[in-house]
Amino acid sequence: MSPGAAVAQATVAPATVPVIAVPVAPAPVVPPAKRTHRHAPGDPLEGANRTLFSIHNFLDRILFRPISRVYKAIIPKPLRTGIRHVFSNLDEPVVFVNDVLQLKPKRAVRTFARFAINSTVGIGGVLDVAKKADLPHRPNGFGDTLGRYGVGPGPYIFIPFIGPTTLRDLLGTTADDALLPVTIPEPFSRKEYTLTRGVVTGIDLRVESDADLKALYAGAADRYASLRSVYLQDRAAEIEEIRHGVATPKLDDPLLDPDTSTTPPATPPTPTVDPAPPAAAPAIDPAATSSTAPPSPDTSDPLSDPAKGTPPKP
Image 1 (cartoon, rainbow, N blue to C red):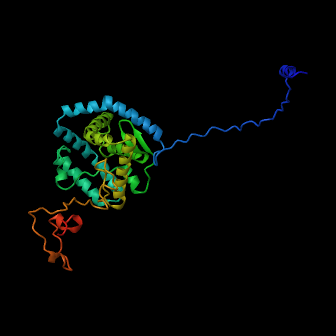
Image 2 (cartoon, rainbow, N blue to C red):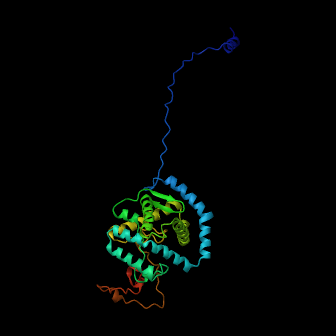
Image 3 (cartoon, rainbow, N blue to C red):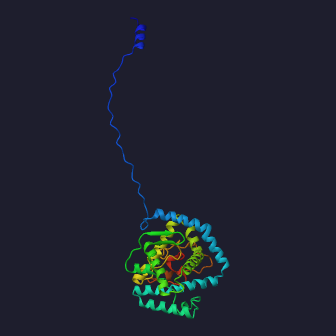
């Protein structure tokens, strides 16, 4: 057979190679990973709270804040202050009861005296005369009483038009609202008064807190978390004062960190010193610097302290 014929035969009838099937094991079925909902400590309802917070901000932007601005423009500030004092004075019986429940007789006596003075001399609380007599208003409620006896705050809750609260404070506020009609029945037990008081105090509170909210939200990467942090820290400070009688500084400025706002830096900044003293400066006596007992620095001049930037010796 010629070489060409051999090549043609190989092309027409190639050799067959047997194929062996290798069984392949099925891929294992991996169950889908369970989704875990993370939340901040003390805020197990964070998902729902954030939703309610968004709804509150929307309603505040289109309804509540515009109404509060109209209220501020129409009602003069002295009248708004007088209305606020009246409602605050009506809360004094509730404060008095909680002072007694917390076993604080001195505070209870001061609260009773404040209520008596403002209800008479202060024309029903319109004028805060008691404050000038060193009897300022001290907010207190059943939520504070529960905290006084060790009841924890419970989960953090945000309610539209009410704002941040906790389960303990929500139950305490409900008890306080039910206590006022018992202590002063008429006309404060009527629904008309309850509704009017809630609307007026809510609008007035929105007016007074507008600047603070702007300051809080201006530098906040997470508005919800910032408001929650400020509220919980303030309430913890109030409960600590009631339980132990130690006033813990509150967050007067929500943008300040309470752990660092009152603590000076570890290394004070050193002022910049000109390496060459000015020509008109008097010469320094070398003998004074060679003394074994250096003179006490003059506290009136910060530059006399060597640690604060005394000019170099010639």
